[in-house]
Length: 206
Image (tube, rainbow, N blue to C red; front, side):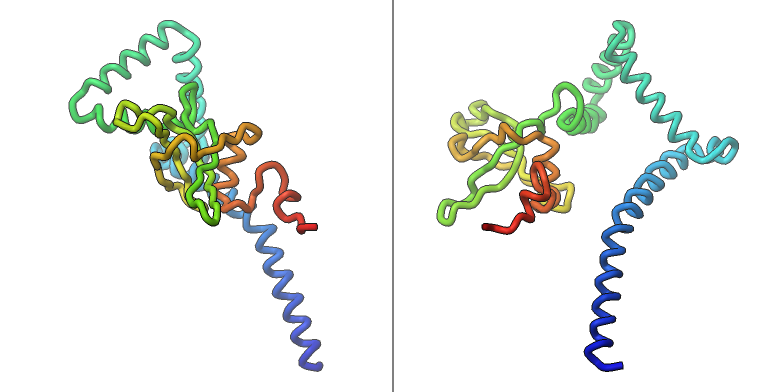
């Protein structure tokens, strides 16, 4: 076998291997993450899962959380009970700092008071002009001495971290034609995911 033919076969095998990783990788990682979450919750009460079947603790937690959410939002008694616990935890020394911090973070992502629902572009450089995608979190900072400023959260790509910056309101552009989910997907994926379609991202310039 000639060297050129051998190299050609190796290139085909290597290309096929990485193509297989692209196909199998997302499936395998998704299954692993789901398994990790379910098994972690099952380990809260391991005897229950061992006695019945794996995943029973996970189902109980999901159903209980859903039931509490339904009762706490649809019924007056449930709302009173939830508000009472909320008031107690918010006014308990020591605990209130942990509880209010976690509550603020969670309500920023889900619920009726979620904050990351307005994607924007923020100008970070003038020449050359550079823009970063972020989310408007506060539209008025006059209470802290910045009357013409707003706060924007800038997520990092391929991470769960980010920056919160104060910027002049004139240096942002709202993305009215982009949903919050699309904007977050674009930012976290490093721009690879695109806003509406991968065809817009990988389309060659004419």
